[in-house]
Length: 285
Ligand code: PAF
Image (cartoon, rainbow, N blue to C red; front, side, top):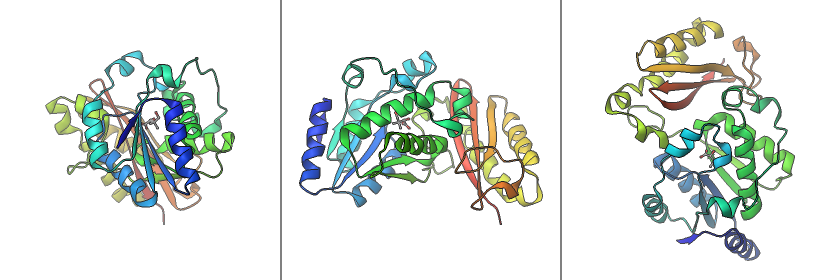
């Protein structure tokens, strides 16, 4: 594995690979890698000749300076995991390398970016669009891999790709990877205290049990039940729980409103000061 720190170098390496007729799979990350990232890399490894993983804590997508400051940075451990996963190029640039000048682009991402994370974290998705569009332009991958834990982010990235004309690039959504007790893997999990870590899996358990009961409950009742049950834990506070159409990301008021038979419940929970997100699919018959 080669560690690449310069934009020109990664662009050249990727251009050369394409000229040789090789396919390129890109896995964008912010580091603090866990088995969820490794599952994206494994998929990219299977489907491409060359795998590029970017490790970059993108400052423009943090609307909270404290969150940016405390975001885990574990380069050495990350490189060991990337090497073991058979990555060809680990692209680990500095902030100055990615943003030699301030990125002032404002993307018109439309309704998919206005709800949930978009409403709670102003500017967040614009920052994601800024960095991912740069990574796409630098590496020109055939495929790019994203985890469904950040379900709305994938819709936003698809919209950005449409706006920017990344037409020949396949955006691949990969299933959430969970710990054995059901907690969605996240780089933020390391910040949980032992007690918080113990109760955190109940987020997924409550979502899962709401799926089992959904056929006998309205959307509104389901939202209330999930929210109340999570909030019943003294350290947990739901920021939002919304049940949305997976294509438009717009909240539904009735189960019959989804077009392709699946609704997605998206939750954000503060566990102490750690912000966890998760989601679950409701198959509507
Ligand atoms: O999901 C993430 O880790 C980040 O939002 C991404 C896609 C790597 C962009 O910084």
